Length: 111
Length: 112
Image (cartoon, rainbow over all chains, first blue to last red; front, side):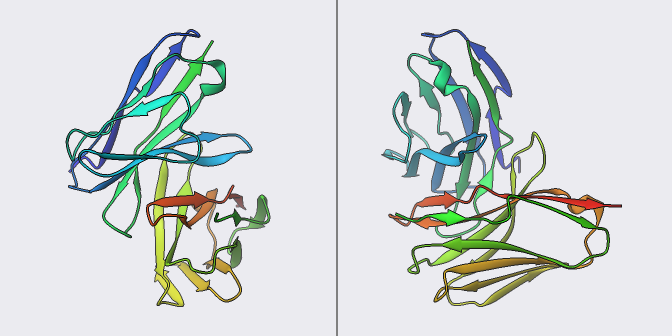
């Protein structure tokens, strides 16, 4: 039982590049979400999913896309990276109204 | 929209002291509240989850309380140790049942 895994751990992009942050969980959680954490701003919800084929926007969705084709995977896509997207990204999952389990995070720098 | 506030932003105590971390929230319709720990450069670890039907939840030296009427939750740490040094965050549901709003955290330092 690996919990929530995220890849890569670190990434440096140039402005305008695209990339996908991977997130997977092996706990059969129906709920998955992406947060970004910035100094002084706390954790902010980007997108979330309540099951395969269902996604919705959080507080700061602009510049990010998600899809949920399987229960296990919830990738986050940056279509055209901007310096404002420099942050630490966390994926998290849970059963309904239960403990939220976080992945180790991806530290992204956009130059 | 739920707003979650944690004061103070930082706290430093000597080893062995009992301490209380505070969390305030604006939406009293909250159905649960979670406390997390974050070590520097790491992800978040769930500590305690209190359902709205509970008033307290305990795990080892940690005790969390929830008072919906006053919009407050507290995390009590007994006999603090240097290993307790970390940032502690609370989070409550916001809007739809699936969105969590986080406080900005209290950075705790326990001095040996």
